Amino acid sequence: MIRLSDILREGYKEVDELERLAEACIDLIIKQNSQRIAPVFKWRFDNPKTSFNEFQEIIRNNFFFSNQTIGIKEAGKGGSGYPILKEFIKESGIRVEFSNKAGTSGVYVGGSLKRIYIKMDTKPFANDFAYQVDIAMHLLKKLPPESKMINALDIVMGANIRSTLIHELQHAYDDWRSGGKYDRNKRTADYRKTYSTDILSGGDVTFSPEHWAKYVQLPHEYWARFSQTVRDIFMFPAAYEKPFPDIQKKFVEKFPGYKLMQEPDKKRLLKALYKYWDENRKKIK
Image (cartoon, rainbow, N blue to C red):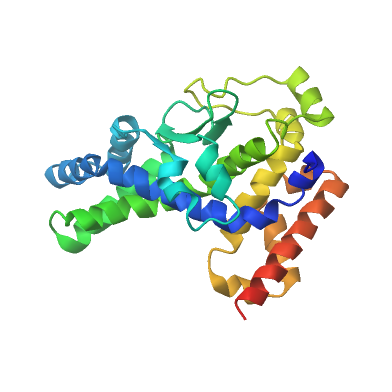
């Protein structure tokens, strides 16, 4: 039997596969909604004098997927090519919904629902999508082919959603492999006695400084942020060639809430970071 403490301290092993699964989910949701992309370009082509700020607000308030939900089993091709996550992909029944329900950028809900919600109507997403559309129009002076439209949305979703999706997939994986016990510890129990947030309200959820300071110290949350931050740092293979002190510095800078965490937790994260960096740099030599 795998101990819960072991599960939450070995998160570095599945990070790369979580990233590939997140990218597969993005590719599938775009494929299922390709018909929603061209109208955005067509509208911009017909309304070139509309200001950029107005255009991005139009996207934020009106762009949505008509087919909003995909299963990770379908996206991950039944687990083929995922030696660590294979059983999770095959058996967990997790679905990902790209909609406007989440009060934060993303949320995982376990139990019988088994669903990840990814928020689509964010200002950064709308801003980047509007920018990609305008760049394409400026360069081509006409409507681009469908493949370039799809590629534009892929770039935007990769920049705005990939990292969040990795975070929520880590939660789902930890929940599945722990038998639903991944967030059952005293620190989390004490937190939930004090703070309650309607994360599926559809509105934007904000944290007070006190709330945030407690939230970032929850073990299941900081390990999910670990996977998220690691893949942001090692997006390109050249990063593995950097000395570990440089990697550590960047990790500390990018990791949300690192300065608020307890020293033993920081040490666990840095130990996992070193193992991840060391194992992967040996693979590419």
